Image 1: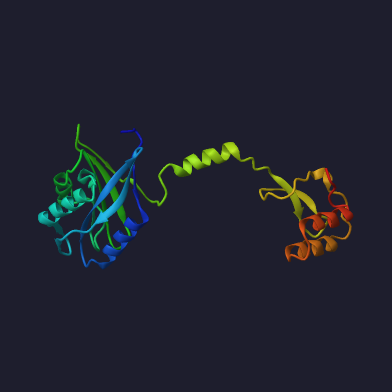
Image 2 (image 1 turned 180 degrees about the vertical axis):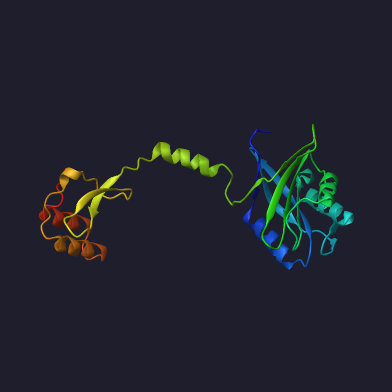
Length: 236
């Protein structure tokens, strides 16, 4: 385990299932899910709603249905010990950990750890991580994210992009009541320096050129040529 508190990451289909089940349930309900550990985070890849008895303030999983689910997972070549995610709804009550929730978490030990999520109809969510072996540890209030991509991909792409893509800041013409002036832009147009801008003459002519270029009435080369003819920009 790392010193950083883990995150609970839900696949979009899992997140959608949870929202739908929560909306459909008159009170509480419970479901189990397969978990894949990626780095220090836990990703719920599949969710299973089993036979259960529920009331407005309780939910009880059917042990036979649970056993059948584990057999089905084995037949599919899935590791039943990865069934370490438990989600349940508190219906209209706040999302908190009750004494019953604590007992249920202790009972649903398919691996050395478990990930639990409690939700309610108001959209509140609270997640926790419980380590059973080699010592008993509980980490509450985990960050909850919904991702379709592999965790860590955003960070690795950002690093690769920064190392390989050189995005230069580029001056461009800024419209204002007086003459145009050069300003810095993040939009990758042609590279001009502030020294390339001379007296453009009547600003209305530049506005007309910009409008024609925007409307597709002339191409980039003609647009640049017309600007040079007005003395706005020169070839470097």
